[in-house]
Image (cartoon, rainbow, N blue to C red):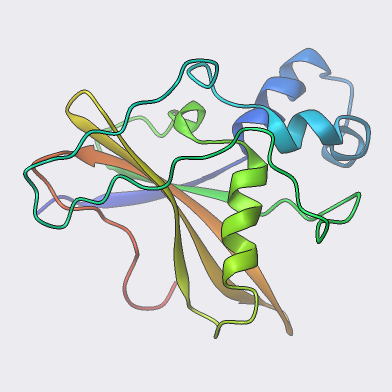
Length: 169
């Protein structure tokens, strides 16, 4: 059985914009580059992703996503949850560019907004070569308010996903 580690990171768009605007704080980036943070895709986002059916009985190639989707429910500024990267101890956690844009994560949050604390929702799952990439959102409790945590993982197609996590964090 593999041992996994959690590394907390920023979403891909925030990392990229931080490189281009190193003098800007996180809050400034979110305010001034809001559109790009919502919609910036990873390096494969301009290419149509393919979803492959596997021989795995529980394989569900979800969720084909729209890059520039919007919702009238989203305010001009919306809190950007931290991204927890679940990776094997001997692997690098720096594969956040495999994830869809923040808008897609927010759609998953919206689907479980009224669900109990601890609820998990699949954001997307994609098979690339022999590796499956997944994103999940969990409704969590920060202080007295319900909020969300974003999770990203990858694993070999002949293995099982480490998400959703079981137990308490």
